[in-house]
Length: 133
Image (cartoon, rainbow, N blue to C red; front, side, top):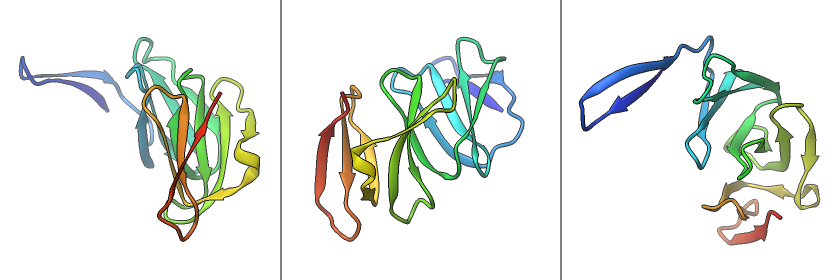
């Protein structure tokens, strides 16, 4: 169940019940969308403005974050503690588009504002910043 916690009013109200939750929740930068792994390889995205109409996209397992447009997620394929390639996944159509020449990275974060991605190479603690546009 996804709930709204209002700390000022000390209230809890249900937003939507979810059917299946494997983990790896992510919230879009605007706070309007929530995504999580429904099962081992399917991301379910809930638009909080229309929570009764979730969208599911089959992606394989990995770690993901929402892009600035909230129509795509950036996915690092494979186990979280292992390195993998980064791909944009279209939420509506399930399309895949590799980025950064299919290079392998240990981890990533999309910068606030969504204009850049910060990555780390396997075995190194050096941060590299690349534009997403």
